[in-house]
Image (cartoon, rainbow, N blue to C red; front, side):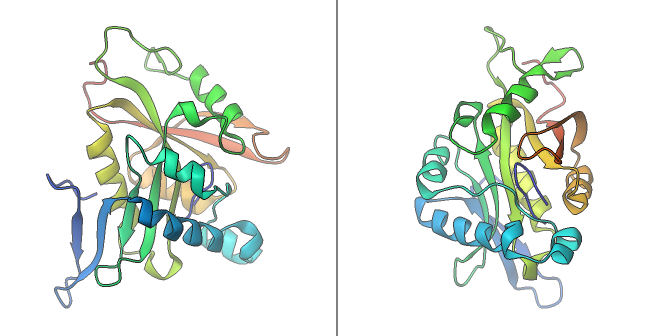
Length: 226
């Protein structure tokens, strides 16, 4: 799947969520806030899912990530709102992630500036995303900078679990969660639609002349204008 890249949470009061396997009642993964120690694991998983490192057939059937980040950028993006990660309970290995990207980072990643420029033009139910309300307690939107789940862990509900946690944590601060998906990445499109994202805009040319992108959005709460 691809959100500015992306391959293919449980709502608890604590920052970490566990998922149980019904067959043996053992934890299969945990959902947590990323620490600086997790960033290298994020980068390793990202690298495995770049188009240059997988076959065309796998990219079409399993999805892919488009953008390659560096450690410094991901570390800075990890504050004040940490990325969401899925990890193996025993080894703490990163097996999935959903990156938190504020619009201020538009110039720090490839294709970030044209993407955010496009998002800022979107009007959703009369609400222009690029215009902040001075009297609002929340900012307009936060971006899912990239979503990825390790191949051997797909189909276990990890992406949905990460998005539930993402929404829970972002709701007090932002009206909308927004992402961009390469339309060629059909697995990602389906995955985002499944968890409630809707296409609000399409545009081309952010990463290459042949790529067409869908901007997808879901409100963090029904009471958006707060």
